[in-house]
Length: 265
Image (cartoon, rainbow, N blue to C red):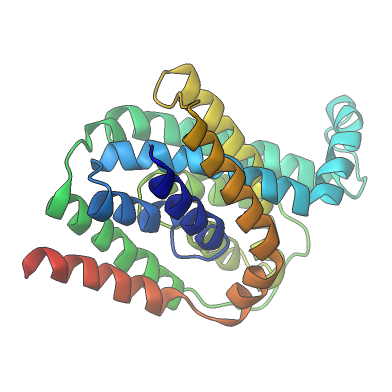
């Protein structure tokens, strides 16, 4: 990576991670159009950039994360414990495991094959952005059934999260939509979605590094992580409030249609 690429991609990642617009899709479009990357190369670089926003989310939700870590030994001794954070601990463990089980073969058999670039890559991302937008527009909040996440909620939302390995399918868009379908409050669903991202992104980073798919330690790549962390932490709170008030489905459809039109023209 060069400085300008590292800076631009880090800012894009830091801003778009907190909105249901697929930060991976947006950053991949930037990499393909302006920096000549292939699609699968852009995907793995995008995962690397998530390191910064992973740290930002961990710092922002530090109280919840600290409480769950303190509660973990008690939960391991008694998974049916009724302590306040046991339910959330169970939800994150089950959802992360479900995501890993489904996402691993998707990466091995599908993402590795996405070694094309240019118009084909743009069309692929554009189509998935349109799907993300339609999903958000069609999924409406209904009557709230439960204030705490259930085991089946973890399975359902964890499975949905796995498909965000494809650029254009928004991780937060998929998981929030899944939790809304499970009758959770929209604000709580958004919080759960970003708590889910912390262990999921960490596992993805470790897994991809272990298989040699991402191994980036040059100075500009590290700078990109620092910038995405700083931008992400400074904007997380305000952008989460915006995400609660605005339906970004229209934006996803517009960006997806624009990507498809750019290929056809």
